[in-house]
Image 1 (cartoon, helix red, strand yellow):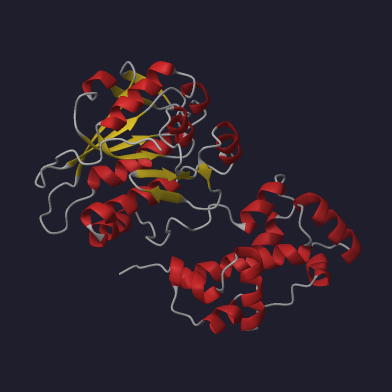
Image 2 (image 1 turned 90 degrees about the vertical axis):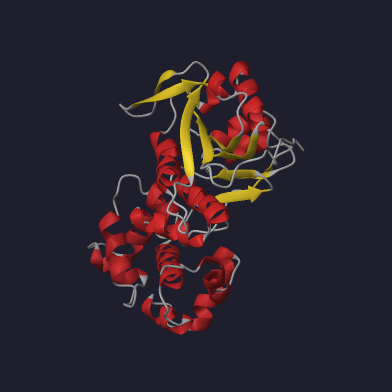
Length: 336
């Protein structure tokens, strides 16, 4: 397992330094999401800024993103001999090239050696792995890149589901917005939950998503398969009428088709039977209510159309490997 300096002295009254490593063709939100969190987080007791932030690349200057926006950056040599509190390697399509850039990888290793904490957002985990910093570690990346990470770096313990993972002083996060969740969790660790809650409120973001929460929901899965949007209107209607009779005959009538033709076409289009799709939509809705409301498990079951608490429990165990009560305990929204 790769080690790096985790105990460099940092004055308590000085903001913690956060350095973001970028390279061409990064995902803009991979950078600016966590950057927003760290730039504006404050110590709730003193009101002082919690962090100072810098963006660096191998040569410095403007760096292209996956949008029309370019990012200014400092040369990496400015930071190689400085103590860093948190190092963050961002992700994007450019990670596939960055993994092969020996100079970039050596720079990241040197920066990590001066850092108390090393993080990645999205496919930035591939770059950390290429630099040898994830060997023997648990890690996550965007679900589309998990197979690549696992196959190319078998010494990394890849986990597909979590939105972020903290293994010692290494933090990795899943796709794009998961970087914001990771940053809020880091603020919690450094400045306390109150500071993170205040930051989440200012960003109009729930504080609920813990690291173990799945990055890939069953509803998202069949929405992707229904790329043409053939049943998009039906899906919205189901979500708004979960307490109604949603058997295949009722759904077929809704789209003016025979039950047989509807079931055949729907399954071909989405990869799910109508019954499984309804179950997935109800499960996602139940998850949200368990996270964000004080409704009892029985009330959630009724509101989402499961009706029977035991039926919902069996569905949760089958799809999520956890009971509704345990899910609530693990992922309960702690909003003021």
